[in-house]
Image 1 (cartoon, rainbow, N blue to C red):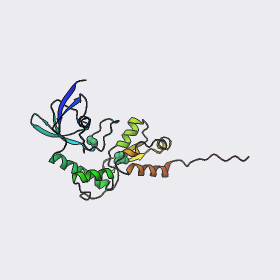
Image 2 (cartoon, rainbow, N blue to C red):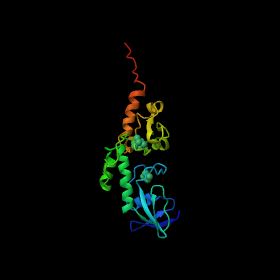
Image 3 (cartoon, rainbow, N blue to C red):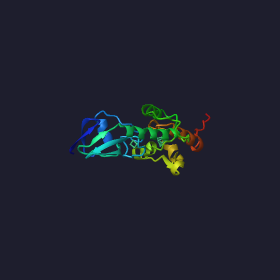
Image 4 (cartoon, helix red, strand yellow):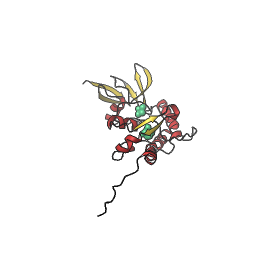
Length: 204
Ligand code: SF4
Ligand code: FES
C-alpha cells in the first residue's frame, strides 16, 4: 500500500492510501473532535463536527474528515475561523436536544457555543447512531434501532432481542454522548421485558 504525504496544521504527515483525514490526523497526534465516529464502525459522517478545511490547487473547501480520504499534497487545517464557526453552530443545535450532555458541554466551552441559543427540544438523543451501528456492526444483534423519521426520529430497543442480549452486554452504553441510551434501555426494561421468573422452592 503506497504512502501519501500531506500537510495537516503545518505538519508533514505520512498516511497510507485509504486512510481518512481523521485517521491521518490522529496518527500524527493531531486531534479533531468527533461525535458519531468509532474506529470499529464503518465511516458514517453524520454529525459533521469533524469538519476541516482542505486546500487543493489554491481552492479552499470544507470536508468531513471522518469520511474524506487522504490525498497526496493536500493541505489540511483542522481549525480556522470558519471551521470553528460551523462547529459552534452544530454544537448549539445539538445542545437544544441534549443541554446537559457532558461531551457537548466540554466542546461547547472550547468553541464558545451558547447552549441557550436555540429553543430547547430536549429529546436527549442527538442521532449520532453509535448505539445502533455498534449493535448491528460489531455485536451483530440489532437490539436497538431508530424509529420514525425527521425530527421525530428516536432510538428504541427491540424488546424481544434486548431482553435476551442486552443484560450481559451493554457495550453501547459508554458510547452514547448523551444520557438518551441508558434512559431508553431503562424504559424498555420497565415496560417490556418479561418479569424475572424464579424457580419454585421445592419442599423437602
Ligand atoms: S441514544 Fe446516544 S448513542 Fe444512540 S443515537 Fe442517540 S445519542 Fe447516539
Ligand atoms: S465524527 Fe465525522 S461526521 Fe461525525
